[in-house]
Length: 355
Image (cartoon, rainbow, N blue to C red; front, side):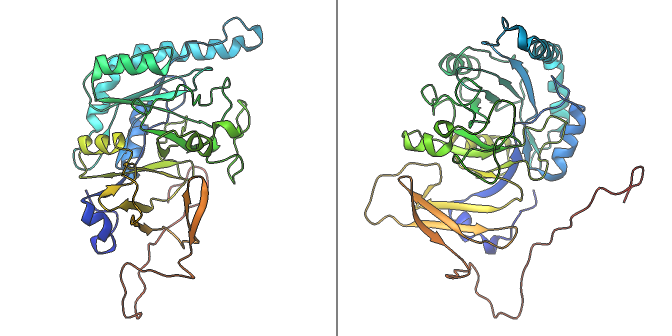
């Protein structure tokens, strides 16, 4: 796999034996309810991502089946779940056809809705044909996945910011052994805190303060964060809708999945940026003993100008680093040359024409 960034610009990652890889593990197509072929979704993902999981809609245990006002919504979901069940076994052959070891890793995945516990996405670590494990709660899901897949499965709550009862996260039933991370950003919006530049706009409601990332940290929950698109039209990695980064030892599927389980993740809103932190040899997502001499190393490469890097400690802003005011370049040169990352942006163009 071609490295995203030159080794000379990533000395911290080099020392830790890690590299950033980028993916989207929560998005949809016509596999269940959604639009577009699975093959198209995988082909589009392979053009821009290092790994992907295309998600099927599998179940909703506490669906409001006795509420006449939402009968059309119930019918829509029931038909989608039945479609996934019919397509599930055969779709593994499609996943295997797009798997490209060392360049593109594909993971099976599905989701379970829940009004009480919040919606969860489940990702399998291998491509062995296996049925979706369904359960009514995170505790039951954890047991079912451990029995069926051992360590080769994880689950994570997505669009966490809705209120509990409206398919937002239930921090009381969140289990870090089942879910190494939560999905903080997607097309639904940003759930970092109550107010953000990307508010929740779906019919399930606005962001609820008690469901945000900040609220979970304040409760003492341990988790990493990721972004994914939750795109429903066969376009994983759709720009600006969310994606995730993992810091893996190599570009194999096993290394990628191990990095997920270890919480070595980032939530990204658009560009593939490099943002790695460590205390000694303990990488982000890890746990280290308190020490008065702890030093936090930060390595950052942005796709554009870095305005600031905020460091929070115990829920409070601890330090704000502005490269403009306190530059700390990885590589100090003569100043005669400037290295940039070049982006080409394309508009819609005319119908029926290719460019």
